[in-house]
Image 1 (spheres, rainbow, N blue to C red):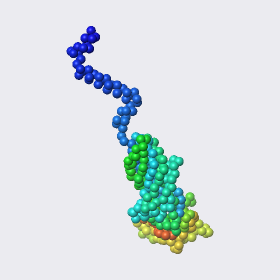
Image 2 (tube, one colour):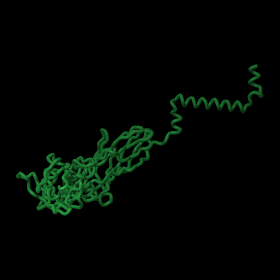
Image 3 (cartoon, one colour):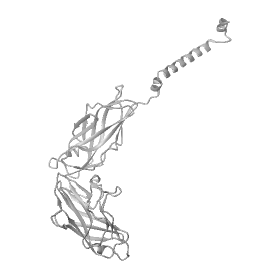
Image 4 (cartoon, one colour):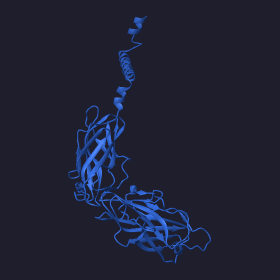
Length: 377
């Protein structure tokens, strides 16, 4: 009975037998793939390994670098892998300067360093390129590592130039996967922001003694007290300083109001006038004042000066309404060289009309304003 079944052509032809054998083999191959954890199937559909370089969100907020300072952080880059453990063997950094040509910022930087984990290497820029080799930076599969960049700056006498700027990007990268195959590297928006060189820089903050709350009008009213600090590298001169005044509609629009800046750090009880100007009333709620120094307004290197804006609030405010008159005073600052602020300073080489946002303490709502407390009269 069994023999007749096998040899009987009515039940299975040679072609059918061949098809059955192929089907059995296919089932065996698929079973082997699944039993081995799907590795063979994964290889069939796996994308090529890749490495992407981009600017990391941890890049420093600082925009001004002081000439002569060392180990100043300037950028953080992220190296991210896909589908493989990747080893970065070498890379280069590009530096583009104020003139828009490679190498035009080399004079500012004496040393550039990169670091990641326990790997740290130093180099220098030649025609805008710094090369690093022998890195052995390991990027985990489908993970990333951070590449920190810092610089040592030349002094002004050593070749750095005040107000010049530069920015960085990652250039050529040599990287290999586990198969030792050299990989193509994708650069994705990896250029840092501009960094500017000055011989010194100021920092501003509201003084704890700045007035607040209920006040009585006065012909010599200190409405705002603030501090100006200076980097230890060089002294600083104030060229001009301006303030914006706002109220709830209480300004006397036809009044002539003198304004003064007093240095409270001198050996007098009330301070000494170091700058003067007139309040310009724009409306019953907005006014502004620009003060020019009466002489050389200098702050020594590493020093801090305390200043007070002094107004005749009796002439400025119209108190006939019988309700509280509100007053707020702000320093109108800029955190970009493309826009002039109202605090102009000189690092003994050039005049700057802006400040590093990281050097302003007490900004209102993240805007570049250093404001005093709300005053009520």
